[in-house]
Image (cartoon, rainbow, N blue to C red; front, side, top):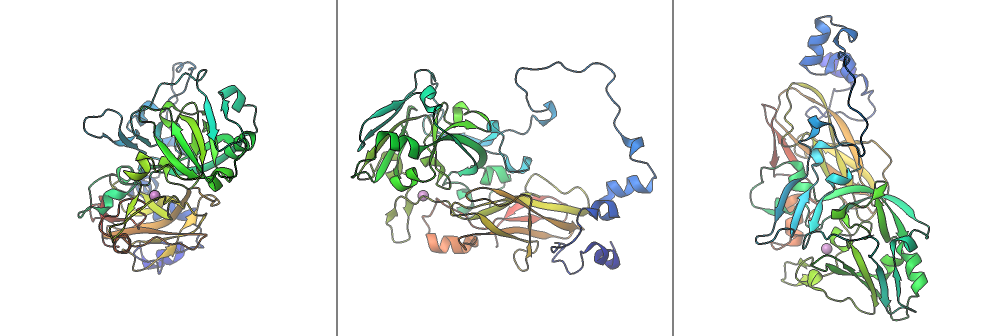
Length: 429
Ligand code: CO
């Protein structure tokens, strides 16, 4: 594209092809700024009508009891599935972030992190016990829980070990989902935990709530009482339907913004106590080993973070032209206030646009138009939240968290676009 065309499209002055704000981006494709495919169609004089698909001539498939994704989309599945040696269900699977748009994760693609597989639970038999430092012990079945007012929140859940593979010395060759897919977003619906604690009565000594699941590992964590009285939820529905078995059916704790392992699945017990329980899962793991060798426990909130989901490894650029650089940003300490994009490894930045209004403890999708003409590029995003926190560089994260850091990795991710259009994971920013 000539320099005058650049100016007309608002591309002039952009950093390595990245657009600034305030341009009528909708016209980019129609103005011929897109790739060779569109240009060829226009040049050949083929009209849109002549290119329309032929309708099917025979009756189609009948109705179905439960809809499934299109057959051609069967490659969009959880990835990075792995169990610890000698176990079947102690491990994780990841959301294929690069294959999705919007912010909601389809329930069947929500990441999993199980500590002993997921149990088979009869919802008619399942009870949630609230006991300990309470006025009285109470057990709730599903029908009883349904008589309470519910709330609905669209918020993310992120494993505290998400993206830790980037601490390896060399950048792993893997997709965005394999690297960053231990984060998902759902519309969660359930009963505010504060209602149930009101019902049981909170004893004067109560400061913590020990939450325990009904899985074989009895996954349990200590949660500050203040969080339980604030925005904690006993979730019964995910994206409008009952929880999936692998996401806690028939009920789970949901703690917005907190590291995912605390949102105990298959919730069976909440014990109010004056002290944290120092359970196996909050001492053997989920503590942060600091540079001085001490382990810091109870680091709850997830940091401010963003990642470009497209372009990303596995999504090669097939032709020159204008692309939308898009991704997700989120913070466990507020809403996202700003996302910046760079196409030159962080030397220059432009503001990204949001596709929806950022909300607290929720993911928001960002985008920015970028013209690629075969030049090498280093694509980076950088998020800032309403608490004023900004993503560090990888080097700065390692410097402050030390060589033994593992959880809460939230540094900027850089993708390298090579001359041939392939995209690889890359360090440097
Ligand atoms: Co933590």
